[in-house]
Length: 523
Image 1 (cartoon, rainbow, N blue to C red):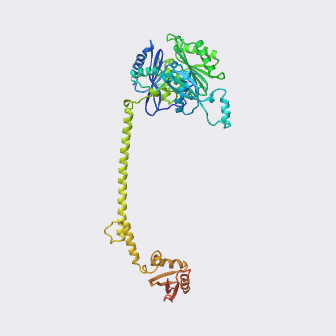
Image 2 (cartoon, one colour; image 1 turned 180 degrees about the horizontal axis):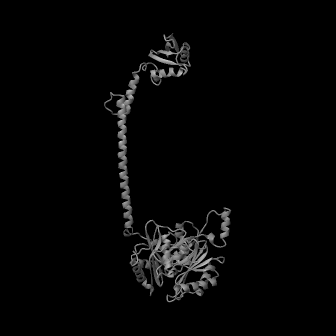
Image 3 (tube, helix red, strand yellow; image 1 turned 90 degrees about the vertical axis):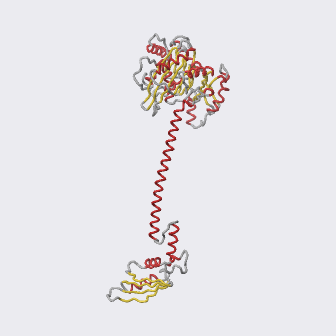
């Protein structure tokens, strides 16, 4: 199955992001520096140092960083994996579903089951879906199908805790090398996260992360980490006979009905003097026969499809480098989960650490303010030009209509005043009916009324129009005497709109083709 695993979703960063994964074991320190951008993810540098004594952590880390610094520039986001057997793991049920409430009650819930006081521990947790456990899976699905399950009354969680004194010693060691880890988790945990997000990994499996100092088992059901168990090592390279009882114990203590599809084997299985790859396959083969299921030695570089900057170095050994690589890849892809960097040991970002980011943000903010100010100035100038153009047009229309206006103060008010003065100069505009009905007596309105009532089929040509004392004297030409009568009939009476229409005269012209008529129309 080697090479069959591909990441379901890599987060590719538009700008280069460097992450340094550091993995502490009781007898060694491993570090892997990876870089990610839009082209993919590469391993820029790696190092592994064996510790002669556990007190040599600081020296081992310094030696690792020195080796890495010879291959690449170190400044990067740092993540840390600590020996998994130094943590306490418990599966408990919390009556709360709110993470904040669960955090507050964890010390009280764990107090009775821990060998040290809860106040001396840093504790974190991840939720475990209780419906994934055998025996409850079918009932939960049936309940959801029948819509009788609305909300979980409690939450099954997996907790991990480490003593504050131990965590402080590791952080002090990191600080001596100028590193501030962003995330802290048990060794092998990030490796299980990477395998859970691999496309072709089975739903139910067990990860065995082991070496001569410890063995940690991570049980995954339906792609959810449900159980972690850690055991001290025997001081010898682990064999199939040593691992098989631990696997049985872990599976049986979780549930009798658990069936897993595969076992993943990670960690340094044999002494450095023996061919590691052959021995790993041999242990996997024997363990597979004992367990009755496939056992696959993990190689993240191959299984996760990581694109390297160059060919795999001859010094790269997945059994000692995968845990640090997994921690870095989990951070690169944003996989959330256990993080003991909290409480009194929470990350305090210093000015030096975030100075470049703050300065960059400040520069961008200043540029945005300058751009906004420039846009405002340009927009204001454009609006001022448009306003000046419109004012010029208004002045041109006003002075062209009323040449007597030489000084423009309020164009609209001045135009209204002069229009009203012009209306008052029209004959009859000062007679009765002033106000809202005064416009009905204007000559233009009268002509409109007369024109609208004369049929289009009657040809008419007006040659004289006189309005005085509510009487209109109308002179014109038409084609016949019948047309004169038709005009009189159309204008007179309620339908015509005029009270009285008198035909003063109607004569045939000398040409004999037209009738000249004179009408008196009383309004």
